[in-house]
Length: 558
Ligand SMILES: NCC(=O)N[C@@H]1O[C@H](COP(=O)([O-])[O-])[C@@H](O)[C@H]1O
Figure 1 (cartoon, rainbow, N blue to C red):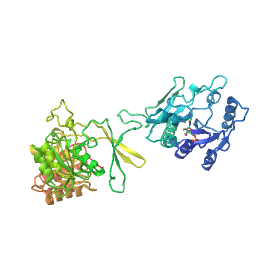
Figure 2: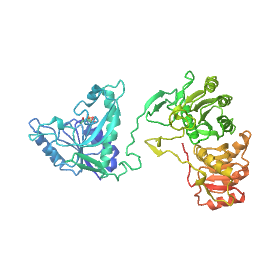
Figure 3: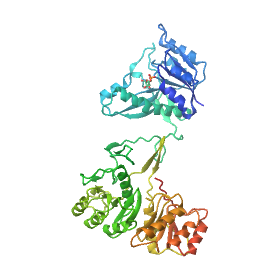
Figure 4: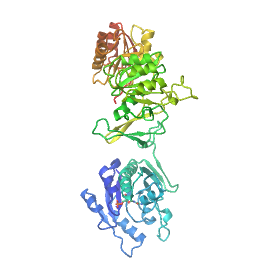
């Protein structure tokens, strides 16, 4: 276990923070100050940490004081020294005898060394400053006099950026640097030491972080520390509910067609709400799956219906007729320029938002009749390559963003987007009956659509249109029942008879197949991989169903 000797001149906030968090299990052996009334003494004592005071007597030289400090510390065992506002420059007298000594400075060194890091940062007009944890190196000459250019210049261990906001003064900026910056950076550095992950080469002036530790960058592109910057593009009326404040932030490096960067063509209409953004993003992601003309209607991020067809109007009609009641107040996404025929259908029932890669003039006129229908254009350049007139435009379906993230209390989950895309060749038929050509096409469509349904998700499809969606159930068999109920009670002009069922994970028991058979399902696509696969296949064979395994899952939990 790493034991630390802390040295502070005043409050020692960083030392106390480290003492409370014990990064990598590190603990304090002692905290020493050179000031008798330093507040850190009481706070350390409260935590049961031994303290030492080594005042700087008037006639004491730098080296004599450092020798006295070493003497006081000789009572303790420690393998790391952490400075925190210890306002004495240390010479080789101390540093040669002490183990690795770290300090934190409230700026991104080598910018703004010295005593007024915040003032200097504000005066320079930087929009980002931060803090630096560095190894302390000798900044004195042979006589023990300070060499200003050497102060705060030891090898950098880690840094933390902090934005400077419009209207910041020294106090507000200092607060942010000290608490949001230093409270992250210093424990990180101590953790690395405690995990033996740091290699410090003082001669070369270099610090390297051992690549085998979980804190080091990994080869897959998931960085040890994720720094993302995005700009507030808009303050929203409210969040998911009226009592929640919210804003949308934009990442200007994103090349992909996106709702965040879409133009709202009927500017006079209400601005998009938090839920509109979220649902429209889900809708756009769904129709990016398809090359053929595709339409989807989304409610609460789940598809109420989705279809591909020869024309956009036909695709929309098929998507809507899956569950027109649920589609009320929904978000429509299209993967082709919206034409007048499609627009006429869209305004036929209440919809909140339509998002498409462009609109004909006639379509726009029709859509703008509806005051509260927000019309979003994701841009000509985002159009499907086949029907865009520009020079090699980015295809709408081209997905360039690699990761998604979800905030958790105290951290966040980051993962690669689910960019899986299957073809008929990927399907492994496991039943006695082979699927027909139409069933195979339907399986692929159902699978790509199901990727956008919350788990546990079940989707019934006929041809390339949905007929029933069972979303977000805590049991798979209930999801089947829900899809069957939707197909039976809500779908218009179609039902589950002879349809294909897709399941986003394997069936753990044959009951899901039994329910599907009752609904009229004749073919199933699912990942496979259950210990009960044999029983599930047997149930499918009994009903003369064709079943194919994808070999991969398509969970979507949020
Ligand atoms: N170059 C070192 C340096 O500037 N250190 C600064 O002193 C603070 C501690 O003082 P405090 O105990 O008064 O909060 C530290 O938080 C750091 O920002």
